[in-house]
Image 1 (cartoon, helix red, strand yellow):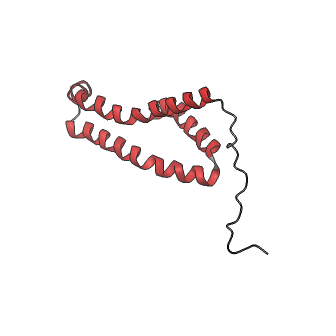
Image 2: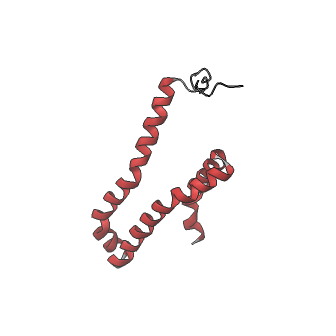
Image 3: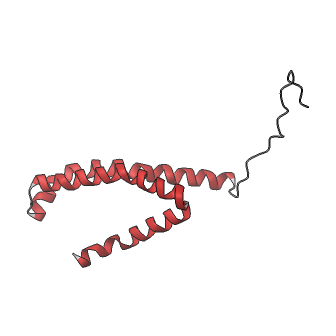
Length: 112
């Protein structure tokens, strides 16, 4: 029977298992950090180009602003959606679906 006065002994602590070497982990963290900045940069690059887009495509500024708004909404909702998918189905499935979406995004104009 355990002694109530004595705290339970903790199991031996060991290093967490990983297949990545420290340089590989640093590279992954760097790539993810760079990728995380793309969303913010896209909005900042888009806004100064709005007058050019309006004149080149012969559309109203409101319509172009609607595309910016749609982009920002999607960027806000996508992590919530993909996070839930990753929790249920795993990261591999989420990555494959994302990769498929990226690969076929250019084909959308063919069907429009």
